[in-house]
Image (cartoon, rainbow, N blue to C red; front, side, top):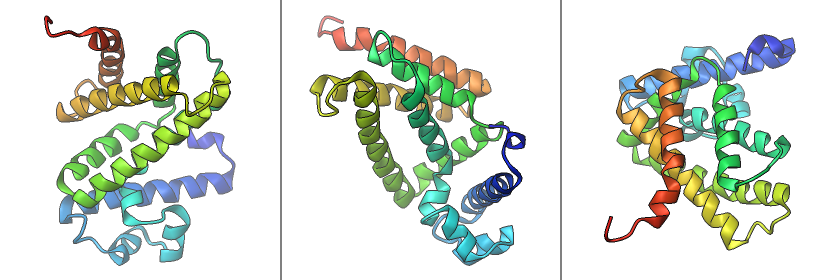
Length: 206
């Protein structure tokens, strides 16, 4: 999102949040997550702890800001999109649109977060919990758009498969060091979703 599109007060808030996120990831990477105190973080950004807690509930949440930016945008996309055809395709369309709305610095923040998850059990656990919460929200939002009970096993399974496809694409892209930038992530995403039908049909004979 272009911050210039926002009112002045919202631009200031967004810049503070971005400064907290980028500084936190730098400190967590350089010093370690557990070794970086909240006092060090707010001093580096020159804000108060009160300002920090207006933006993030915890250190884990600021570490995962790139994830929450993407998935909160995704849920907003689902609320307004026209769902036609396969739910799997609708999920991919919303996810691709959400990636397009991420700012230029999102790629670096996302890659830093993935590296941090691999080194820090507390952040990885928080990431998995957030993934579960977002998946539950997707059941409800897409169920409402489709007029389907969010507990419908068909809806739950297709969304869980879609989340798994995203996770495969994102982790493989991160493991490759973000190769080819955002375009590389989109390519891996398309390939993962395209592989879903054959994956479901996979048999012992190959």
